[in-house]
Length: 150
Image (cartoon, rainbow, N blue to C red):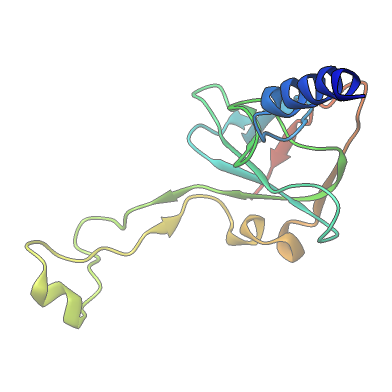
């Protein structure tokens, strides 16, 4: 009996040891444009529409507006888990020269405090404002292209 349990425990130990704790994800890619032009440096967020289905994923677009999602618990650039997602976008910049926000903080800093501003309509930064959803499937194409407009 003792000799029969040992191989079983060895197989179990190897199986558990090989699991690195990362999520099983599927690749999710696409392109984001704004008024027909590639949107570089934008943050793309996929948030599950239901709390217990799917995992939050994010990406930053490259100079051509391309993105490749990843989750905090998955491999870099490996996508996310299948499910229904709300999709939001943000692209921020500092304020224009001279548009400083006076505050108590500005006194304690070496330079002026600047307030970031959105370079795309702010409605794209919330699920209710963007109204954009995507369904990530376990097999097949998970390429989602988005053309944001003014």
